[in-house]
Amino acid sequence: MERRAKILVIEDEPGLQEILVLNLEANGYEVVTAADGIEGLQKFDTEKPDLVTLDLNVPGVSGFRLLQLFKRDRPTVPVVVVTAYSFEEAEEVASSGADDFITKPIDFRQLVRKIERALAKE
Image 1: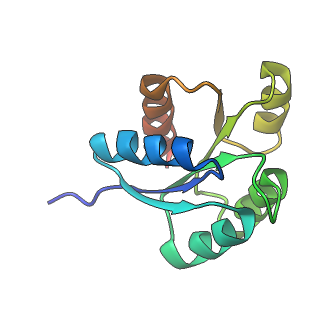
Image 2: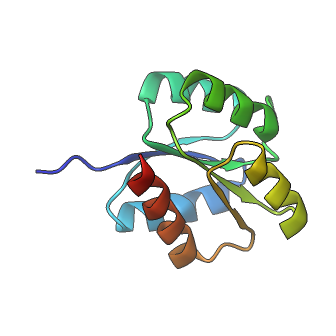
């Protein structure tokens, strides 16, 4: 049996986190979650995810700093930023190390396509 890709979802909004988990699991992914930046860092180290979805506005450690740390420590792990920021701001984030981004409200089909693309590049 093929191993399912493991995705770390870092999202502090409980309702959105739950919807992300349900959608990603329905698409065959193994999902682990973190509700803040500190937990996100810990899970990144302990869970060794294949990909991270990252909200930029999480408490504890900012999403911007997490992105820098993830890319420094394991640069081959794709990071898809999930943000409420404007397209221009999100584009700036993508150019600073994220593999892709999607703006809120989330189109889950589009998010899954972005995840599949990012994982295929590995």
